[in-house]
Length: 231
Image (cartoon, rainbow, N blue to C red; front, side, top):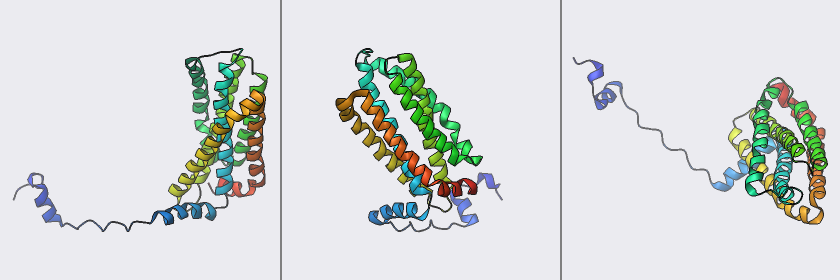
């Protein structure tokens, strides 16, 4: 008898038996699939406030960075697109530093850490207004703002993934869509705000959006804490 290693693949299948692959899953109609995303959000008490807080934070992030290009191309800076792009490296440093925010959720600090991120975001916006004529100060503001905004997002996504059940993919879809809508709204507001009131109007609007996120966080701490304790 030949060793097993010399058998052809067909012979091996014949020896061990072969079962046909299972029938493909019945396709789900798109309206029902879309409705299941809303159902997943409604099923978890912490999902909706988490999505709103993250969307508000990302709206601030997009508003700030879009309007920052207007500020840096105007006097006293007059930077080119390349110079403005270099400033993005400072923001990258902030984003990398915020990657460890998920560990705060694992330690049960998700809710206070989210509040701290929103407070830091507000402080960075005040700093952005004070630093409107200093590139060095703006670099510091960019790092701090990116740490705050990215930490808020990381904490929110970690909290959603900690929710019980098997709906993570649907919750992640809701997370991405809400952030997209928030970011699009922030970017769309930048131009009209700059035209209406310059950097001051941008900062005031960003602070208002941060305040919305803070109000949602404040009224939903009990729901959010349930997830933090469960995790």
